[in-house]
Amino acid sequence: MNNETTTLISLKEAMKRVDHKLQALEAHFKELDFIKDNLTLKFEDHSKTLANQGAQDELWTAVLSLKFTSMELNILYSYVIEVLVHLHTCVLEKLPDLVRSLPTLASILRRKVKNKRIRVVWESVLEEHGLQEGDITALCIFFVAHGNKAEHYIAKVRQMYIRDINCMISNMVKNQALQDGLLKAVQVIEKGKAEMAPQEKKSPLKELIPSVNS
Image 1 (cartoon, rainbow, N blue to C red):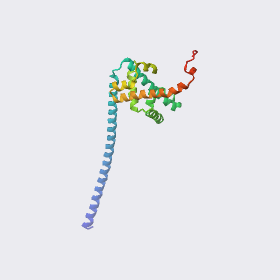
Image 2 (cartoon, one colour):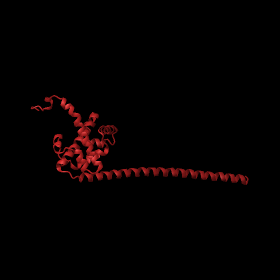
Image 3 (cartoon, helix red, strand yellow):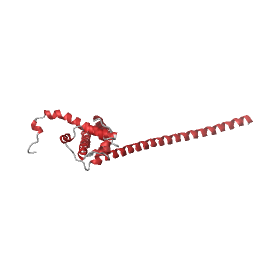
Image 4 (tube, rainbow, N blue to C red):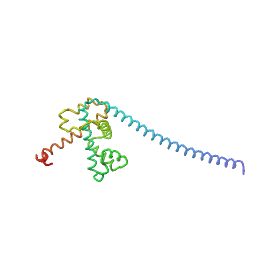
């Protein structure tokens, strides 16, 4: 075997070794890219979690620092509890087979995370009422913070005390997310009352007056 042949064989072997190293490096870089992508996703998820936590902390601070009188707080609470009950009812109407397993709005909020059917219905109900998840978060925080001491006022009583609830909310609630949630709650309830009014006018008088026996 002459020197040229030996040199050629050695060169091919060297090229093979280089090729193997390049393949190993390529595999290593792919692994690093995969790790980088995973870390990026985790960082983004963590950032979103921190952002959501920060927003909720601001909401709690805003709710707990409200300067309403007891009467004003009761009126706001009345709108909040009515809209939460209404949303719960709407979901159950669309999921009649799950009435027993969804006894409260909290059960809907908890189960929609893993149950696609409940989640789809919940999202459609929110969309029908012009609401977003952020609005519900604000309303639920308000309910948890004040529900133990607030009282529910019916619509006629609310109107006796405050003529322009929207103006009151806009002027006194500075946190934008809380303000939006409360204003939308009022809008949903008032819209429902407006839609029910024509039906009540068409109803016979005897149907509007409770029976003495009842």
